[in-house]
Image (cartoon, rainbow, N blue to C red; front, side, top):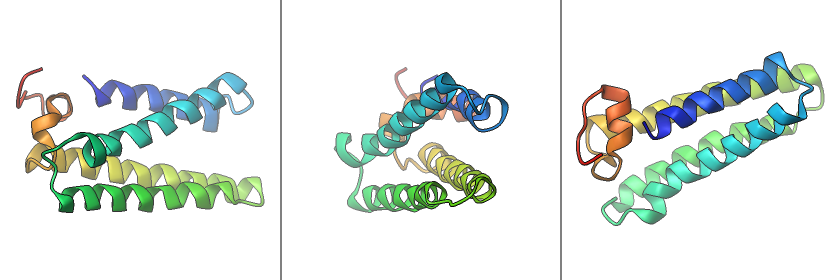
Length: 131
């Protein structure tokens, strides 16, 4: 169901790259590619593609995305592995909260729901439009 599957694949690759198979070039590259594409496409869908999104909705999505990215940049500036582990874990926590916020807004108050029925169906089990 749309982004739900993407998040599951991303979770698997992040777990492998950050904890289980940290030396695997496959999982590290996959994690970065999947995360980058997903992190860019999800907000871009509302900010650039959807004509129905209000300017305020677009501003909120952009602000939350940039806020989340600031934690990723902070983790990439780490000087030691210990620093990186803490900062990168924080990035995962903050970005997850931001994604949940976006998905819940999408589903509960029509934040972007007219053009994202798959996310609504994934998070609620109820279709809100054509699948």
